[in-house]
Length: 397
Image 1 (cartoon, one colour):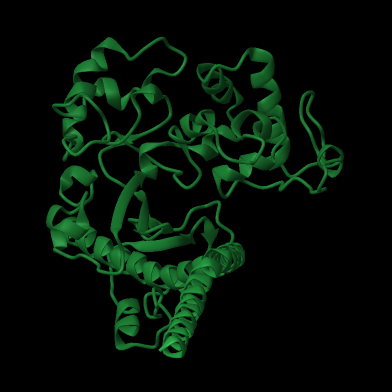
Image 2 (image 1 turned 180 degrees about the vertical axis):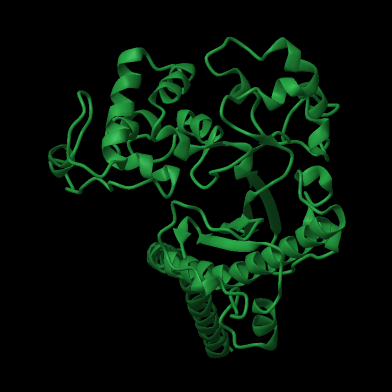
């Protein structure tokens, strides 16, 4: 009995020891868990930092790649856009010429864009999906004084430069340098400049010794380069004012419907009072020239005598003889500009010394080089006037 109790006691003690051992293992496993969690957290944090670092590095590489590849993408896109916009511009020119020809046939002449052809695309009901916008601008070259008249008339040249704000000394210097540029000799006027002056330039060149083919050529003449253009060779407001008065291609009459009133008051202060009512009539209801409500004289008999005799030595008419058509086709950041000089009489300017066989109407003048039937058909259209010159983005073709 005593042995049984002792055995039971020992067994009980063994059970307690076994229970405590199992409890110890269970508790031991729980007590070791807090020591492992910080280690796992640190590993997780290191992985997150590594991933974020890789993302940051890849972002930098991606940005650098985009900065290098984006200009190439833009250039390719602009190149593709230019081809489309070029086609749109030439198509718009064809539409414009067709609309002008229709009005010229109906009215026997063209007087001013407000005659009805100021918005030819709208008149023809034509739009282009390849361009966001297409604008058409007209500059009546026959509404300006013939620039050739200044070659032998220094007095008028000085008066005009004085009206533009130049003092007598500067005006005289400009006139002398201009005359030395266009004359055929090498004699230097008192304030002029010949070969020696231009050969000392950073990029040496020589005077043309012939009439100007474009007013932009003034940028090569000493004095005019500093007064009419900025440091980058871009025309200033002074040049724009001068260009609004003179045309290098018009060597005949002046169209009163687009002429600047200041042409009739050179050397005077303000517009002649007798002419004021007529200028207000031409300006339309808004009182501003060059807008869609401008009026025009459709017959020479409507021109008052005060305007007919307003410019000494110049005949005043009411018809357009030279016209510059400016077309700008835009899509996004891409812009294509087309300029076409039109001769209503079919004559060529006296100051042009280039061959004009490429404007023969039997040839595909406005071919877009796509060898399509459309491009061949374009060149065979016949208009009652002649395309004298074409410029693409200021580049003469």
